[in-house]
Amino acid sequence: MKSHLSILAILSLAAAPLAMAQTKAPEAPKEAPKAAPAGALKEEGYAKGLLGTWRQEIKEGPMSGFGITTYTADGKATNVITMEVQGKKMEITLKAKWSLEKSKLNVEVVESSSPQIPVGAKISQTIISLTDKEFRYTDDESGKEVTETRVKEEAKKDEAKKPAAGADEKPGKK
Image 1 (tube, rainbow, N blue to C red):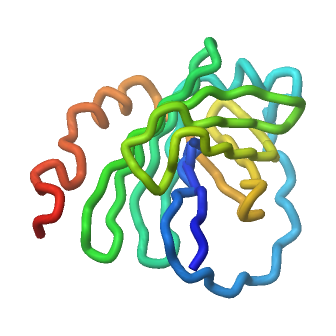
Image 2: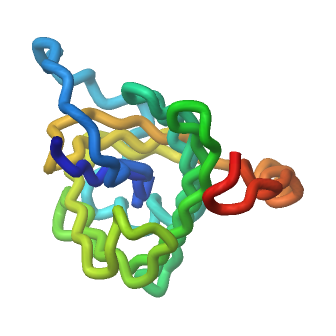
Image 3: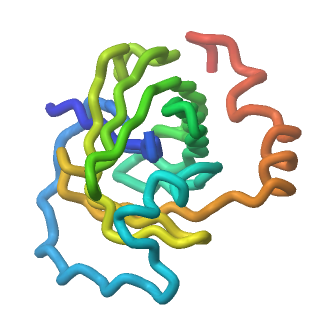
């Protein structure tokens, strides 16, 4: 059993890698990295290009759902992960601080609603490409390539109106 940080995802933070205890499945052979899309920003544009809200779809083993991460200019980020794990719905909320070193996005969790993703957890991602619509990176811990899509302002308002997954469930009840 190994605990994974995946965000969003993590972030997901970017996400979306989530810390979930589970057996690691054998990995498929790695594909050659995809070419950067047209309109991709250069490293010096990453800090400004990252600002805003991003969505990551999550489908890993028994987990499925999505993460919404918002990066702000003051170096803060919020991440809400809504998912279903083996028939149970859950929502995890994270707050973090972020920084960039060339193409490395470094995130440190400062608040967490989940004991699986503790305060102080550090996440490092290597940016592959960043455009106004798509954010691709490699999670440095897992080596997995992740793609997030920008959430437009109207979509953010719609997401905020939706009830949280599992909001009607009480902890410990089915």
